[in-house]
Image (cartoon, rainbow, N blue to C red):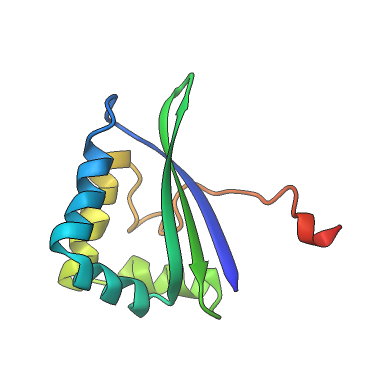
Length: 117
């Protein structure tokens, strides 16, 4: 299983916009979100908020079910399905990161993995 970890700066200063987005997905668009996750080989995804001295960040952890992250990211990047387009516009609105340019979000580098001990 491939795990992708990303940190996105949040544009809002209050804990409201990302939470509203997540609640909208749960309450009104759950079937669309499940189809979106399945279509991009996502086995599980979690979102976390971290308050830092530089502002609030969303930490997103995605576990892919047997596919390479770069392949899935390339497919997501060019996808123009209505839900994918809407979802990517929300990511851009909330974080300033454009999934059409950076489908994996800001780059990260793995520096420690306990499974290698």
